[in-house]
Image (tube, rainbow, N blue to C red; front, side, top):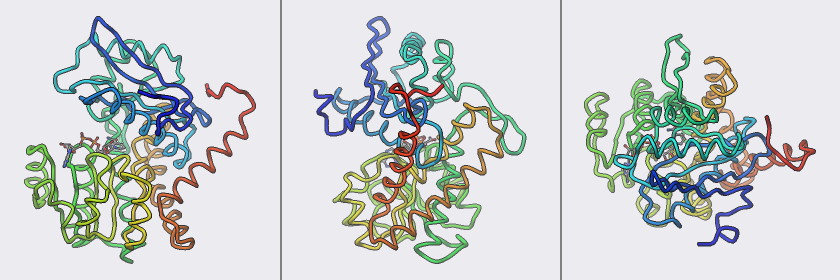
Length: 363
Ligand code: NAD
């Protein structure tokens, strides 16, 4: 396994391999860039088939967090953690405490949060060993009620407002009544997005590899269930990927028909060239880390103690960011993913110039 010469290394500041023999913990923490602030990103637990797969995932995800926070205008750097193991059977208090100790050992350079395979209970276990964790304690919501620190409802809201901006740009319509949307993956974010869309009058098609999630969407929202592979070829207005990464690839592009792609999944493009191919086909792609930033914005306000209304306004601003990306792409002929990267890197470089000290950690 190469690290410094890994194709996804991309000048990471720090990569930490964590092993605790007693609990069996094997994990990797990747800190990509702390120019704009401490590296904040979720801790994913997944049964990776080998260490290389885990390393690739954590490097790609942590770089994505740098770009996501930069584009969203947050004073946060990019980082991510992965625990190698089955999230259904592999968790023990000792393993989670060992992970919390590793996070703590970085002294705040990396701050963790929930991700796929982890949630509030795991954050609470980490919090017994480190203060560098977010999402372990309940907080007030916009309507004054108290909710868990889970950021996925905020991610779903951000995707919803971003999807509306994409529909307005590509299809020239402001309302979603009768709009046909295919959602791949109706888990935490996908189901939240489906609820917003249903309320706005859209028609829904859903797929998931977990049958109970499909049933919920069908029974609660009247969605139409389709088999996982059939979701790509539907004659719909919007395809919303809300499951896993890499799903926009040479194979799926042969069947994809939707003129708009707007969903929550991270790392949707299997390679950068796919972004250009979508552009060539007049398919409007909402760059993943731009549209799915609602969760990190929520987590940021939980960290700094901001109000629910500040967080809500910032999340709704995702629509403006996307509008800017779509307009620039239309004017220059470049693809939306290239424009998003450029905007994110410009802010990052601006932040770099403000940093006088070689050690880039913010308090
Ligand atoms: P989740 O695990 O709750 O939901 C994912 C769903 O996708 C599950 O129901 C799973 O069964 C389903 N799925 C997996 N493979 C599938 C396949 N091949 N076809 C159809 N369905 C499949 O995760 P989530 O928190 O809802 O996150 C969804 C995506 O959004 C992930 O890529 C995640 O990285 C990204 N994301 C999540 C957040 C957040 O706040 N949770 C924030 C930003 C990005």
